[in-house]
Every structure is written in C-alpha cells, then in structure tokens.
Image 1 (cartoon, one colour):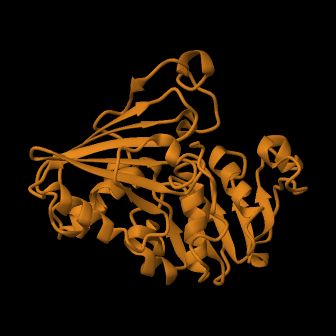
Image 2 (spheres, helix red, strand yellow; image 1 turned 30 degrees about the horizontal axis):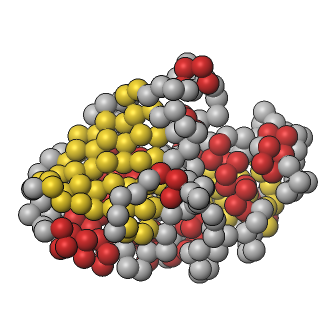
Length: 319
C-alpha cells in the first residue's frame, strides 16, 4: 500500500509519518511540502531522525499511490481537490475540516460511529480533536435518544492543538503555568458534533454548551461532559460498555481516569458517573493521535481491510 502525504510539515503530519514509517503494510511514496522541498523529514520532525531517509518534495505522482493523506490547514483541502485531478483508484483521507459535512463523496471518519461506511468508502473526512473527545462521551446516549436536555462540556487541550506555527498563546513563556478559555460556545467543532448527534436522534440535536480551554501541556484532551439523565449508574455503565464492546480503541473505565492513560496512544478512555440527575462523562484522548493522525491511520486500515489496530499498538505515557 503506497502512501502520499500533502502538507507534510505540521504536527499532525509529523505524527502521521511517525506511524506510517512503522506501519507493516504502508510504504511512503512521497511527502509534499513546498517550503521544505529537499529537506530531510528528520530535519523538520526531529522524532524521525534515524527512522527514514526520505526527503520532502514539491513534486509528486498521484498515479503512483493507493492512498493520499491531506494534512494542510483548514480550507486548503477543498482548494487542493479543485485544482488537482485525482486518479479513480486513489483513496483520500482529509485531516482538515473541509469535508466533515460529508460533501464531495466524503464519509465522516469516526469509526465508533461509521465503521461499515468507512470500510466501503473511497474518501474519508477525519473528525476534529475536540469533536472526537466529546462525541465519544455522548454517542451511547444519542443512540438511545437520551440527549433530551442541554449538554455542558468543558475540555482542555494541549498546545499542539494550535498547530506548529508559534503564536502569542502557544509560546513557552505564556503557556507554561497558565490556563485560559477560548472560543467559548463558538468553537468550530460544534457543527460536526451537532450533525452527528442530531442524525442519531432523528434530527433532534441537543443544545451543547462547550467551553474549550488551553492547557499548559503539549498534547492530549480531557473532556468533562454532563447532562440530565434518568439512567441509574449501573444502567449508564452497561449502556456505554455495550456501545463500545466492539470498538478497537475506546475503553470504558470503572474508576476515575486521567489524561496520561491516553496520551501517546490512539485510545479514547471514557468514564461515567451519576450525581443526582446529572450523568457525568469524562473522556481522554491524545489530540494528535485519536484526535488526528492515529484516527486517520485507523481509517486507512478500515479502507484497505486491515486490522484496525495495525500500526497503532502504542504505549501510553502513564506509568
């Protein structure tokens, strides 16, 4: 399976390449980057030093690959698709938000929701990182039509979620020993979350009050989500365990969870607790893996009939 990557210089592309160079069924044919053409991958992504001799290129042959990953910034994937002729046999996985509305023949790439559709697809739109964490906290309730009240979600993310280009809120002096709210109630991932939950509940999407936060760490998302629900604790736990019984990477814990259980892996770890009428769900993912590149490789595995876990058996940073 020959792989091409467009937009290979960012954090998500670096994580993707780290996974692909060690994937037993994948061979990287090219990694595109206009700004880094000719540079070694390991010079830009330090973790790849000694792993590959490949170099970035400005030129590529789409006819020489089986699958293409689009890792450019949001909005650029649609432009690239319009400007390029893609061979009929090439499958595409887009890591931007351009096609998460399932336009242009794309399938929304959340395996816990759309596994069979992904297997039959030719184009997959990888979900957003916050969207993944929050949806995995709510999918079992949505399947049963139990999201009848407002949902409240607070999620804290690492600095890599803002991308590789330094900014006022990502450099060390500002970020360390600091925490802040941003895009309260307006984050762009709310649209894809609403589409999913609304479709699962016959068009009745709940109101989601989402407050994202910047954390003083590099990677990972911890989401705290709650809503009114009449399920008892044991009923809620049984519902979640049943829903994720066949999931390759989503696991329901029977005790409080922490972020390090998921960081550096493609896992989503979920824990459910009941307080009066409030059902509280905590989910933890790595924003660069299950929230981006790891899920993209999981989708690639599904597209080509491989074991979902292929190339994704990773160790968490937890001790």
